[in-house]
Each structure stands twice: as structure tokens, then as C-alpha cells.
Amino acid sequence: MRFIHRGVLGLTMLLIPAGAGAQTPAPPRLVLVCAPCHGFDGVGHDRTIPNLAGQHRDYLVGQLTAFRSGQRIHPTMNFFSGQMTREELQGIVEYYSALPRP
Ligand code: HEC
Image (tube, rainbow, N blue to C red; front, side, top):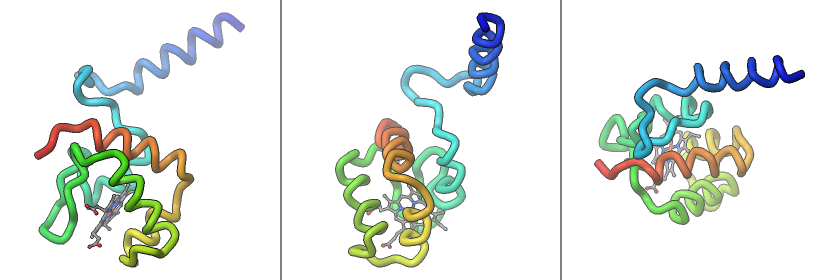
């Protein structure tokens, strides 16, 4: 039991990217879904994609909730915000809001 425990801990440490300092939190795995457009750095890849880095947490949660419910309409975001749970979205928001503003 103790052995297994240590193994899991070792694995977790391997998965944390090297150089992930105190200032930049490690991205939750699901950021992979958002990064093609919003970037791992939270900077939109073109003029039509908003920056998320350093944005207010409450604002981001509010917008994602509105996309999920269809109150704010944008087909891409209506789709992606519906692909995960609120808790998962919350984790992504924590990540992006903690990044430095571009
Ligand atoms: C295929 C590209 C694409 C992907 C993937 C994508 N987004 Fe978006 N996102 C957009 C675009 C485009 C907009 C602007 C929508 C509009 O104009 O109303 C947007 C808007 C947003 C906004 C509103 C920002 C604001 O300033 O109002 C949030 C928050 C957001 N996305 C979060 C996410 C998250 C979290 C994910 C991953 C679960 C994600 N997006 C995945 C393209 C994408």
C-alpha cells in the first residue's frame, strides 16, 4: 500500500511540467481543449478570439455559464462550454485568471 502511494506521488511529480513556477500555475489537462484558440498563455490566436489571461474570474465564469445555457450565443463556445462540467470549467477559469495579462 505504502509502495503504491509513493508510486502515484512520483508519477504526479513527473506530470508537473518543469519550470512551472509559483507565478504560472500548471494548466489543468482540459485546457488542451481551449488552447487551440485561446492559447495556453490565454492570448487569443486571432482578432476574433478574446484574451482570457488575467481576466476576472467572476467574469469568465459568468460568460461560460451564459454560453452553456445559450443565453450568450456563439456556436463554437456554446459547444465547448457544454463539453465539460462546471467544476472542470472552474478549474480552467482558475488557470486563465491567474495568468499575467498580455
Ligand atoms: C474553436 C475556437 C475556440 C475554442 C476551442 C474555445 N473557444 Fe472560447 N471563444 C472563442 C471565440 C471565437 C470567442 C468569442 C465569442 C464571441 O465573439 O462572442 C470565445 C469566447 C470565450 C469566452 C468569453 C470571453 C469574453 O471576453 O467575453 C470565454 C470565457 C471562453 N471563450 C472560454 C473558453 C474555454 C474555457 C474554452 C475551453 C473549454 C474555450 N473557450 C474554447 C473560440 C474558442
